[in-house]
Amino acid sequence: MPVIPPRAVHDFPFASIVPMPTIDEYLQHHAARFEDELCQFLRIPSVSADPACRDAMTRAAEWVEDQLQLLGLATEVIPTAGHPLVYAESPAVPGAPTALVYGHYDVQPPDPVEKWLSPPFEPTERDGHLYARGATDDKGQMLTHIKSVEAWRRVNGELPLQLKFLIEGEEEVGSRGLHQYLVDHADRLACDCVVISDSAQFGPDRPAITYGLRGIAYYEVRLNGPARDLHSGSFGGAVTNPANTLAQLLAALVDDQGKVQVPGFYDDVVPLLDAEREQFAALQFDEAAYFAQLGVDGAVGEAGYTLLERRWARPTFDVCGLTSGYQGEGAKTVIPANATAKISFRLVPRQDPAKIGAALEKRLIELCPPGIRIEVVDMHGSPGVLVPLDSPWMAAAARAIEHAFGCPPVYTREGGSIPIVTAFHETLGADTLLLGWGQEDDNTHSPNEKFSLRDFHRGIQASAKLWEELAAVGRQ
Ligand code: BES
Ligand code: MN
Ligand code: MN
Figure 1 (cartoon, rainbow, N blue to C red):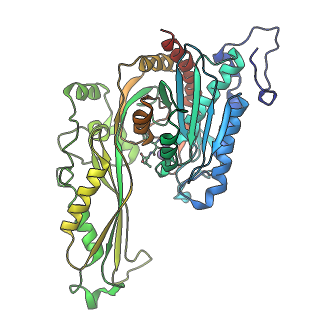
Figure 2: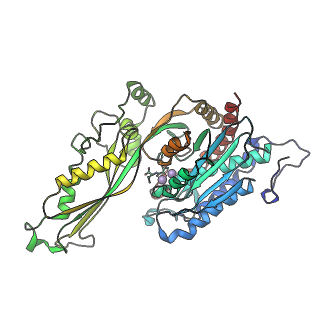
Figure 3: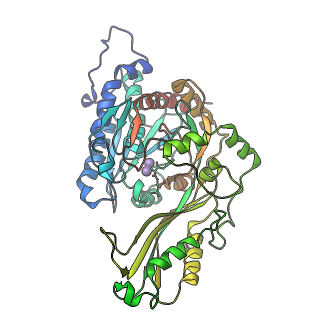
């Protein structure tokens, strides 16, 4: 029988005289409790961006540590300059590899709260989905790897490989504390591969392994004009209006073909190969259904590329927020003293966020008219990644997914970013398996975020199989 500390004994249904259940049987038997535990986790409002949530951040970290401790892992909550990290590890297994599981317990702010059908931190089940902030990004997905370890420990005793868990609370705000920890403690985190479930399947019943993520370069552009807000009649035409200027500057950053107009922006872009374009096309992405789901009648983007190519393998420019002038009810005739924009560039591999930041600032200063002072604040940046498709770890993950989902995964890239993936590669020399259990329409970062309970359970099942498959690779 497994050696598990007394606290870890869950109500185990099988008396010792009956045969031990298989992992899949164990998962089935405990499915309802796993859902309850996910709900507990989702009730903690761990919004990393919100200073009012500091206590909740600590509680969420402790909740994760408790879960890992109950499985008999050696655990630690590690303070950082920001929110704490949770670290846990099981013993090394001679001849078997080590996998590092990464996830995040922080979530995005729930606003606009009035758009939620049920409150964001009161998980509610509807149509086989659990609705709550963090359901898919990333509490639900991350928990699959903890529950799969529980099943292994309860059914088989020892794990077949060494697992290290590194769960952070600052993913949604740039992972600052984790970056520092990684540099300082690379030895402790040494591993053969990294496992992350924080992305999506290609569609319902179309599980995917993601082999590419875009990078990001995020800035705040601040324009300062006259010393105070002015009467737009008395002063209109006499002074440069910061709001007008902001609109002009932003519009100048992209042309009518969807090409970003920052000098040198495309210099390092790895061009899409014909073979990859064919693979994307073979996925038969349903654009009409995608638009319908988003409530739009079409879209424009960079000319010469399909929608999937633009999302996954081409860089973009987006305005994420705009603030200037009168925002209240009715009309107010005013020339605002300031205008600010939050902007992001999604990057593809080889583009360097620092180089882009410098070129952006130079270009905006060139374009800036008299009467306006401009400030460009670098918020955060990280390059894109591509993971080799031909590793034995990839093949092992594909077999685990097929076991749980009943069909092999397709191989996708994603438009989103998980900045720490690049750092894992550079610092630990380990590639990441991006095994997303979510769906494209899970409303991540939006109101009514959800996660399919069926996918939650299949994710746990795939994860449990993954440990076996990865262990087998190490023994080859
Ligand atoms: N889980 C997402 C990243 C993601 C989104 C991966 C979609 C694959 C598909 C993650 O939590 C996230 O939101 N990342 C941020 C990073 C940023 C704050 C540096 C993002 O992509 O905006
Ligand atoms: Mn995430
Ligand atoms: Mn996110």
